[in-house]
Amino acid sequence: VGLSEAWVINECIAGLLWVYYNLLVGHRFVTWGEAAMVGVQNIIIIFMFWHYSPELPKMPRLAGAAVFVVASACVLLVGLPPAALSAMGTAPIFLGNGAKVPQILKNM
Image (cartoon, rainbow, N blue to C red; front, side, top):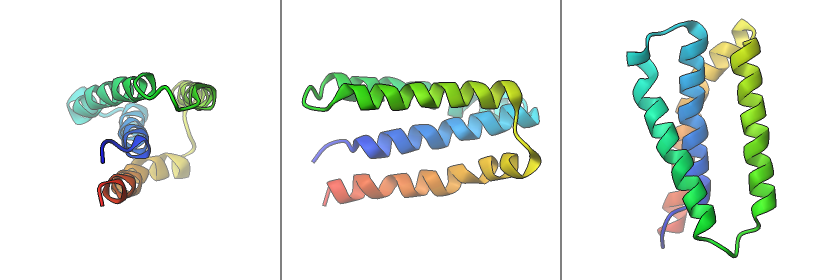
């Protein structure tokens, strides 16, 4: 059994999207601060997962992480149109709930 890599990554992305949304619409830190801290914890868990799983190919994972960092910087620096911003606000609901499926399947 164990931890599903897909679950941790999807949960991390969902949480960070929630943080980005709240930052972009100007909500106060109390709205998104906990999600930011959990996001940092998830990032640490992801890198630990990769470190303690030497059989996993690292380059595609690091490339994906780099793409996410660049996309995050673009979104936070440039912003999004209203429709995309609204989608970003609701995406964590679906992504976060869907993220649990790989973990459930792994533990069956």
